Amino acid sequence: MTRIRSTAVIVAVVVVLALLLVLTRRQESTLGAPPSSQELSWCMERMQIKLPTDARPLMFYYASGLDAVAYLKVELRKDDLDSFLAASPFAAAQLSESEKAVSRERGMPWWDVATVARFLSGMAQLPDARRLYILVNLDQPDTCTVYLNWWET
Image 1 (spheres, rainbow, N blue to C red):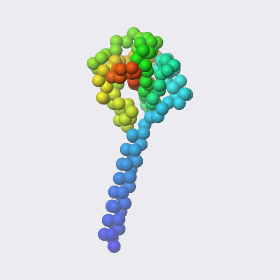
Image 2: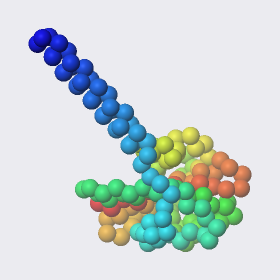
Image 3: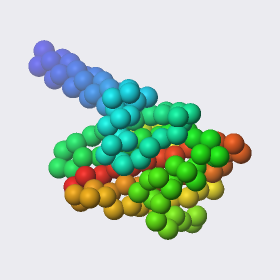
Image 4: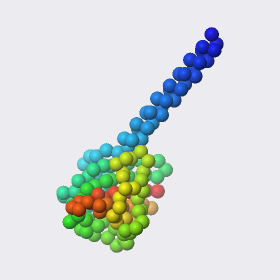
């Protein structure tokens, strides 16, 4: 009888652990969503950017703890890229074509910077110990995907 109980307890623990593993993986893969108009306004204010009127905000994610961090993924027409950069904190920044300032993030499959071949990337220091990182995906002929990562320490 004791042996049956021990086996039942072990099986129950294994099932609970398996369920927790599945739920944790499911939660990680759903970080982020298309930004609401309030979230987009919040991002533009904190990141000190102005999006062109026909820009297409794709995804947004915000997390806070010891540091606050925000991720914004936006699609722009390539014709709008120069004016977007000129009116942003990156206007005077030296953007790199060989080193990515933005990296892949765990749990955010939509933050797909690892596969980008042609890009511009860099960092801008903002007031109050804040930083803004950018990666512009230039792989498409008519549009570019802009990845913006804001940090507050």
